[in-house]
Image 1 (tube, rainbow, N blue to C red):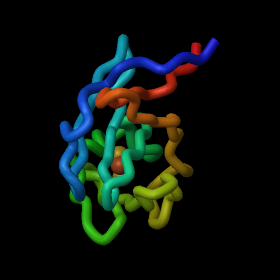
Image 2: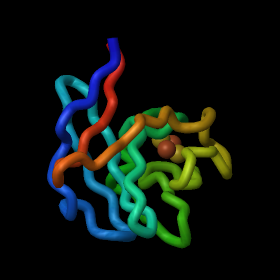
Image 3: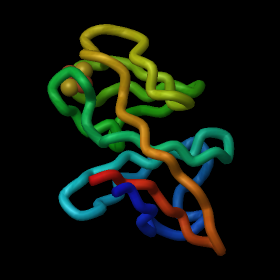
Length: 104
Ligand code: FES
């Protein structure tokens, strides 16, 4: 069953930046895209590069390993060698806490 898990506090991720969040054994890249929080697996769909260490510019994150690019708003793969779109997690802010919905 999916449930929301606290991932930090509102304001932890500044606009235009990304932070790696660990929830259990998962690594999640939490982006602040113009004030909207967006979460994906922190693993590029090529061979798993850490997108939380990538360059964020103009709504696009560039993988630090081989430069695949993804649209931050929805995780769409934009350039090779990406192996597909990113897995996105629902995010909400409740009473000042950032929460990410994690499935089983
Ligand atoms: S691991 Fe991201 S482009 Fe290769």
